[in-house]
Image (cartoon, rainbow, N blue to C red):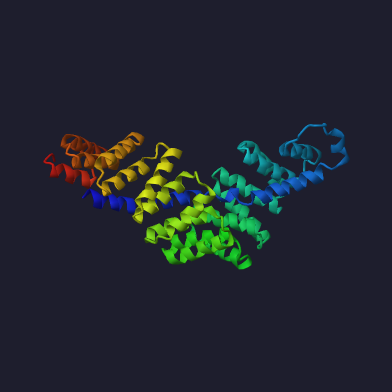
Amino acid sequence: MFKDTSYQYLKSVSDTLRHLESYINFVPIMWNKVFLKISVTCILIVGCSSPDNEKTAVPGHMTSPVDSLTALIKQNPDNAVYLAERASLLLDQRQFKEALDDIERAWILDSNHIRVQLIRGDVYYVLNRTRTSRDSWLKCVQSDPSNEVCRMRLAELYLAVRDLEAAQEHLKIILENNANNATAHFMMGVVIRDLYGDTNRALLSIQRSIEIKEDYIDALDMMGVLLTAKGDPLAIKYLQNALNINPNQHDLLYKTGYAYMRFGKFNEALEMFTKATIVNPQDDQSYFNMGFIHVEIQKYDVARDYFDKAVKANPESFKAYYGRGYAHEMLGNVRAAIEDYTQALALNPEYVPATESLRRLGRF
C-alpha cells in the first residue's frame, strides 16, 4: 500500500506546474526592462547635454538616473515622458506611491503618449489594479496596433487572470508580425496546454521558443516538467540544460531529481535532491523522496532517517509521518509505526493509507 500511494503522490506534477504558472503570471513587468533602461539613458544623455546642466554638474559626482530625471522635470515640469520614465525607475526601486504620483501626473499631461500608456500599465499591474493596467495597454494597442510591447503585456495579463482566449488572440497577432518572439511562443504553449489540454501542441510551441532562444530557462523548465508528466525521459535533457544556466535554482534541482526518480535513475535523483536540500534545508519533499527511494531499495533504516528529516522540515507533512511509520514497521518497530500512522491521521483524517495501516496493525 505504501509503495502504491507514494508513487501516486510522487507522480503528481500539479504543484510543479502551479509553481511555474506563478512566475509566468508575473513576468510582464520584467520584460523589456533593457529597452526601458536604454530609453531612459537616451533621454538622460540628451537632457543632460544642455548648457545649463553642464554648468550645474558637480565634478566627480555620480548622478543617479532618478536624480537626472528629477533635474529634467524641474526644467520641464510639463514633460509627460520624463515623468513616466521616472515612474518606471521608482517602480524598480519599489517606491510605489512616488511612482503612482508620477505616472498619474504624466497621464493628465498626455494620456495619448505610448510610453505613458505602457508605463502606467506597468505601475498599476504591480499595484494589483489590473483593470487599469488592461485599459492603459488597450489604449496603447489601439493607438499603435503594431506595438509588440503593449500587446505582450496584455497577453501576460490575460494569462494571469485566466482569460485564455483573450491571451491567445493577442499572441496570434504578435506571432503574425514577429515569428521569432520566443516569449510569445512560450506563452502560446502555456495557453494551448491550459485552454485545450493539448500537451503535444503545447510542447511544439515551447520547443519553438527554445529554438529561437537556446538559454530560455523558463521554456527549458516547462519542457522538462511536461515531458516528465508524459513519461518521456527526454525531460532530463531539458532540465539539465536549465540547470546548466542556473545550477543553484532550487525548484530546478527538485524537478530534475524528480525526473531522475521517475525514470528509475535513483543515484542521480539522490544527488539532485541532496543539492536541493543544501539550497533549501526546509525542503521536506526532497527529504521525503529520498526516503522513498531508500524504501524502493529496501534500506529502511536510511529511509527512516530521511523521513525523519522531512518531518523536522515540515511537522505538518502527514505523508512524511506515514513514510516514517512505514519504515519503522519494516524495521519491526511496530509501536513507533503506530505512533506515526496515528499522527499522520491526526494531521489528515481523510488520509486512507494511514487508516488502512492502523487497521492492519489492529489499532483502528
